[in-house]
Amino acid sequence: MKQCLIYTKQEIPANHQTNIETLLNSHKINTTVIKERNNLEDWPHYHDASEVSLIIIEEDKEYLENVLLMLFEHAFVVWMYHKNDMQIREQERIKICETIPGIGTYLKAGLEKGIAKQEFKRRVVEKRIDEEKLPVEVSSLYDNKDEATPAESDTGEQEEINKNTKELVEMHPSPNHPPNLDENNEILKSDSEDGEKEDNLLQQENHLEESPDLELMKEKHEQQALQFQKRSRSLQKHLFTRYTHTEHKMIGIWSPLHQIGVTTFTLNFALFLDRNRFNTTVLEGLTENHALKNLLNRYSKTPKNWVSYAKAIHQDSLNNQSLWTYKNVKFLPLDHDDMELKWDNLSLESYMNTPKIVDITLVDLPTGKMSEYTIESLKYLDEIWILVKDGFNDLLSWQMYIEKLKQSHEQLPFRLIFNQAFSFSPIKRLKKDLPYPIITKIPSLHKEAAENNYKKVPLYEREEVASILDPSFIEIAQYLYGEDFQPINIQDLPKQKNWVMKLLKRS
Image 1 (cartoon, rainbow, N blue to C red):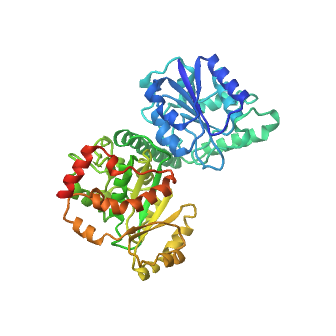
Image 2 (spheres, rainbow, N blue to C red):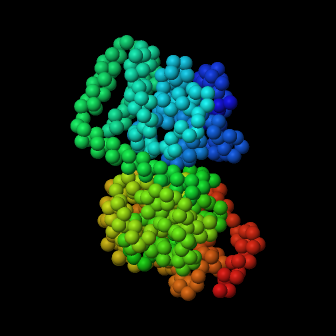
Image 3 (cartoon, helix red, strand yellow):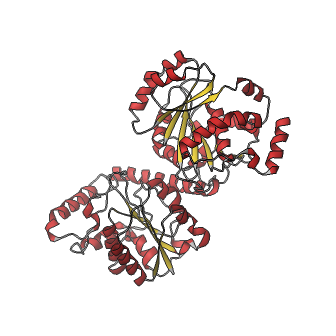
């Protein structure tokens, strides 16, 4: 029996929930209301996910795109959307509804009158979907390119809807504009709204009059976007596992000054997160001066037949060759020729968004003045952490640059981490001159770091150093995940790992 899963952040009024369940049950679709997101993610572990033909969900765009569509590849999605979230476009597999009554109206029109997207009919209405007929991958929520043939596309749906405007009118966006998401988008419209219908028809006619060259450019852009999305999906399946703790966090780590230890901090904090069972990825920001691969080569060999993640984003059939795991952390370093690839908004978006399926992604941003690539990358981050240390006059020379950077990215939280701190380090002065919260200060490890240049393990893999770093790392983790975060002591780890750690310590 087909399944419908319902997960919303708000309580569905009992009468609306009953109406939806009754409607679906009458068409032999079993309905399950899920209260917790973890239970939604665990569904495929205990049930046949291919039976889920419909999902009604209220969640953020990244979770929908990076997790849900991949877990339930056979399902049509009705997405509860709020105007203030972001502007997006529908796609063939997703219907956007703003209200719960609107969901009921759409389901009723689709199930009883056949007025719905073609994919809704194929996945929800038909008795059984042949798996081979399904699209191999899904396109981005930003992408309005449908994979169906012209006869199956929304053009046919729109013609059918126009014949039934007294019952239901569905506004379908042009490729250049987001849909009209007013309250009445999903409810029946009366004859008194003819002016709105005429405006909609005029908008469609204007779209048809666009030049062939412009249409060709749009089609090429859409095809490129679809290619990146397909590679992204494939890479997610081969390289990453799904969420295990909470919402994904993408943190950019940057310093205006060189020799601060950004890459070293990123690697060691990633190992701390892994020890505490967070699914962690380290992504190297685009730069000519890549360093992560060289650092990793001190601790592990380059995997056989390894191809950089950057190349895999740009080429097909490389999705299983970019895996570089060290201590369970997924590392995505750049290779020597990666900046010669064709980088644009599409490829950068794919590069930044694909890892957003793990618990946390740490982005090692290039040190110094930010390039256009780095600045463009900031819009994909949840926070940016600026590493600073002693040498205050040098730092103050960057004060205006950092403030302008903040002004142009008002929604991005800026945080400070004082690295290599001494007892006399001017923390109070730093708070005054750079008015951003200081998450923690990390003790100076000059001697240990210099000594570690001759060792084949990272600093954090040495127990005596980990004990020094842990208080600062715990403070950062509690900042990220709340005071309830409880670190896993090294004594609590499996004995075999303790034995390995002691062996490494003696090396």
